[in-house]
Length: 146
Image (cartoon, rainbow, N blue to C red; front, top):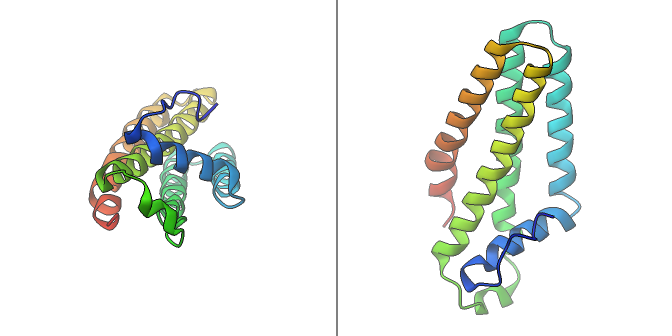
């Protein structure tokens, strides 16, 4: 399901590779789902609105920070250097996939606030999570992907 929309084009080589690695590697998908689950439990059971929002953003940060290691997952495999793929395409694939993961998690946390009929929480988590996603990717992740 995660790879069905990827075309067989040269510029999407690493898009496919990162998604397959995320699914098949025992580390990334499990860690991502666990962090979403723990964050969702914190958002669901903590009674204070501001602490819930802090937990949502904290677990968004933790998930994103852990997924950065996906960039280095294939660093010791020499055959990737044989791909006629530009470094910019590899970097764009990583940044796009990380952004999609973070926005998906933001939406899930906002839905939890919506189920609890906490509209202020929905707005703050949706806006704050989206703003954090773009800020974190542009200011922290992108400079480190070299």
